[in-house]
Length: 402
Image (cartoon, rainbow, N blue to C red; front, side, top):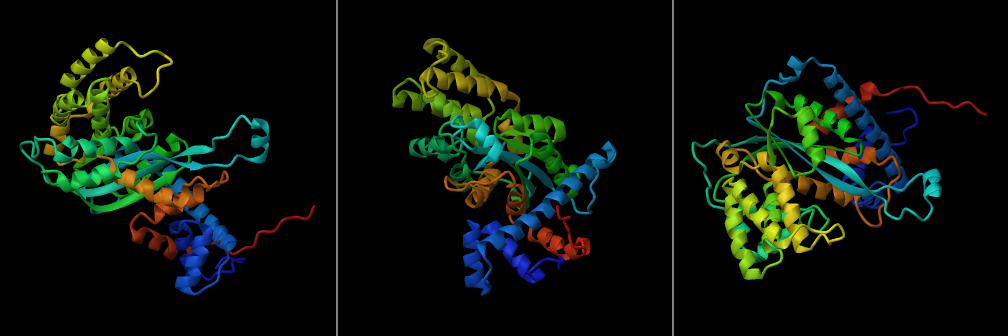
């Protein structure tokens, strides 16, 4: 135990688990009382989680710095004996509300009313899959040529509704696809509010520790955000880059349905979606360019949902991501084509940290790190708790009286 700790190691472990996995510190205190029959105040739960979370953050930063000091040949070797058959990195961003410090809030006055800030989340997936001589699924799955389902999926995808959620689309894809998608052996999670450089370094260090560099097949799957692909170029350039299929097909759907009758738009969409599934992106770009010419370029003040803007957005998005949409080859190689795992993981992290009624101070990082820890393999946190007593400082911290 730490000198000033009022919780035994066994109880501290339960308190931190409750703090990271319950919907709030108050709920964690209620859960501990109901399930463990111990009374711990919400404030004590918060302090315990902050302390342990800071230790986990420090460990993560130390591991990242140690990885950066390795020579390049060592970074391509596995530090463990068993390496995954297929290594996959998936990244995306979430959002939480951060309350500004008093001085910052005073300087902003009434000018700032939106406190939403981005979090960065990465999934490290050890997977297994079969490779194929030919495309195992040349025909687009039925879920993506169903009008009601496509309308629902498109409403949920970031860029069309403002909220990221591909979970429903991904689950339906897994149920209705006519080929067997890669299977997950284990999943680890990294989450942070730090900048993209530090996030990328943390993710690269975590991937190296799990032997990803030595995997025979590696994939990096994400949506079209430039943040994702700058990180891919910096840390994961030896991974196959794959644009999330669901985001791509939603852009195609929105452009096809823009400015025309529903029946005409649906006919065009079904044709274009099959081209996308078959990797014939140039044919879609030709049709989009023709439609853009007919509609005319969007004005600067034109609404994002206007037909001209929808087509322009799709044309730009698919042109920029053209080299990352060879979906037939990815299926032949047994690689994943959706970022559904990281998107569903963000939903689980959001359950703990996101809400219109939830405001965090500048020190949200420890709990964000703990939330990711408890979505990773249980053995990793067990190792932390086993080794923690050896690293505790037995000296009390004293402050000089002023």
